Image (cartoon, rainbow, N blue to C red; front, side):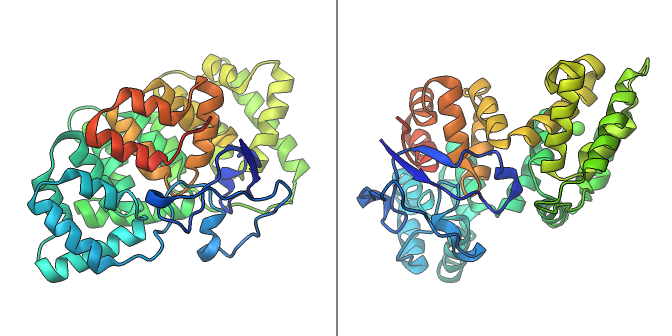
Length: 368
Ligand SMILES: [Ca+2]
């Protein structure tokens, strides 16, 4: 067992990640097929790279494939599609990061005059098809797709909707809104309004329109006092006033909110989960709950979701694909603590065949 010190991601959603990640350290500069183990000294520190170069320090499991050759990949995929060789398709596409998959699709279109996603759709079926198509979308397209899926048809899958909205940064939400319009020719905002109602609708809109509000190291104690008072007053009314909660939860930084939550928990003598449970109902309860949980610890929120929904293909696919270049190492770490087994073993037990191979490749490795 090796321990390696990982720097916190630049994204503040990773702020709750433990600095010490337990598990085997892999060299990202070596193809997974021939991975060798790196043995950094315990005291060795990984330098904080600039954002473009920091893939060695990121908390995702999928990294750029070294010695990447998009033409060769496109040609191999062309042959694999012809032979319906799902194994090779999985091997190539799950070992490239999203940007690399996009350039493979470009090369593929150039020499075969065919759209790669369309060709994959024709060659594969079922859950494997859905997973491979998800991998071929850009992150913003994939989130737009998940939102559309949650809203299309009768009713709404509020939980799926909230997962995407609550765990995306304001910048990502803007990109998702653009991707949604391009992909479906519809306005995300209008669809969200027509699928939701009352306070829940206001909450969803406030999340969609939240702005970047991070001033690291700047603690505004006066504002913490003010927010704690506003949230308390709102739940002490006969009927909870949702407005202050919506405002505070969507207009403050993660760090600020966690300070507010701690104060609130101490004053009420209850966990945040309990406070939300006791004072909200219906969709609003679900919304505030997911917002609070993902603010407190995003990787733990995903680990819990995976643990509760291991059999639900769409949930597992959504989390593994969307977090594979974000914080899946942290999710794995939380999963290990929570489930008393690793995410890798759980996937191995639950899935079979090429779908299993693809999911395991995204998960990357075992946590002992
Ligand atoms: Ca609907």
